[in-house]
Amino acid sequence: MSKPVLLDNVTHKDLRVIIRYGKEFGDGVNQVPVFPTEYADVQREYPILLRKRKDKGDGEYQSIALLGFSRGENLFLEDGRWNAGYIPGVVARGPFLIGFQKREEGGQVLHEPVIHVDMDNPRVSEREGEPVFLPHGGNSPYLERVSTILRGISDGISVQRSMFEAFDALGLIEPVKIQIEVHEDEKYDLQGLYTVSEVKLSSLDAESLERLNRAGFLQGAFLLVASLGNIQKLIQMKRWRLLSASEHA
Image (cartoon, rainbow, N blue to C red):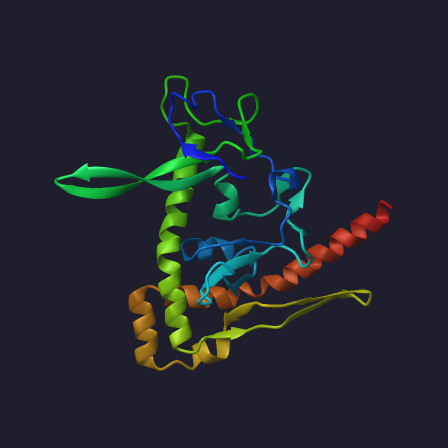
């Protein structure tokens, strides 16, 4: 259960956030949602794939970064560290999320984005971790970083549905079979995933390409395609992990 409350520098003046990574903090997962606003960073480290959201009856797509092959397997976790040059925003934000607060201005009701904190999140502490506020009440450098991450997530949420609808309208989205053989006794067959077809993308006419480009979606399509090369990187990480485990057995 989560317990999100509005963050403020009086109630939460002593709040700290543990910035280690591990299964005890919910990081033992093999995929996490990612957003178009972070694709340029994500694609350098992870395969980006699409899946249909289970909470949406109309089959709305969501993009994810693949972290491992079996359920609960995060190949980037090691001894409290996340071994990658970029950590996806939904992980790096820690216990924070964006909410909205009503405010009246000029007779109009505005919904202003505000930061909430999940007080039931295992990273929340008053004894250990990065301070959220400075001693005199200002935002700490850590909270400023989190605010930037949350803005990126919020912007990405507003963009992604339109982007995937544009891809789908052009027939670019197709199911992808990911069959992995780490060695002869260990194989994986990942189901329910989609990608942007490189062949269909390269075959688009000039008008369609221009339409995607004007909407700001064309780069996202190319980044999705380029990221698939990281599947081989994950295979090598998995093999190294198995080799390391056998040497220490």
